[in-house]
Amino acid sequence: MTLSEQDLPGFKARVLALVAQIPPGRVMTYGQLALLAGQPGAARQVGYVMNGLLESHDLPWQRVINAQGKVSTDKLGFGDIQRGLLVAEGVVFDTAGKCDLGQFQWWPQDAPGQERLL
DNA sequence: TTAATGACGTAAT
DNA sequence: GATTACGCCATTA
Image (cartoon, rainbow, N blue to C red; front, top):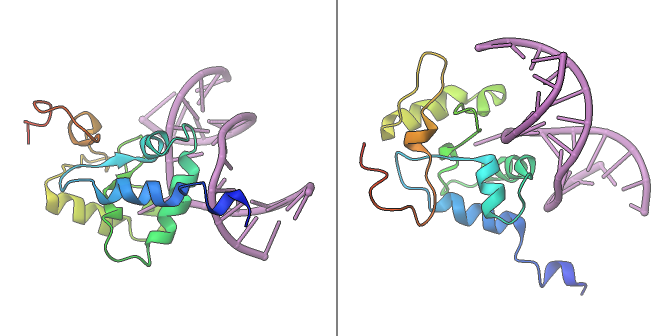
């Protein structure tokens, strides 16, 4: 076996692990996930991985949005569904379909005291 | 092996 | 604020 399937933890697995940890009412961006997965700038790959989650029914894929604070699933046809799920969790979207990342973006190990607005 | 693709990001225009 | 152009890199054909 080569080293690519043994040593590498797997970009996918790391992204999935991060997504699974997003608490309700909070969101993460693709670039952020890429950064935390160890590949800054690899936001596209995060999206590619997410596409594989569609068949996965246990991960909160809905809590992953783009850096503009908007859902990127609009082109896929279920953007309304994702927004609806997030709204149901307490995320507020404005008329442009954007949410306040400064308020809802979640980071692992997030410091207590910065999430009190909710 | 190379080429093309993609739920993105950032900077420039 | 909207659009264009380029980069980023894992995955697939």
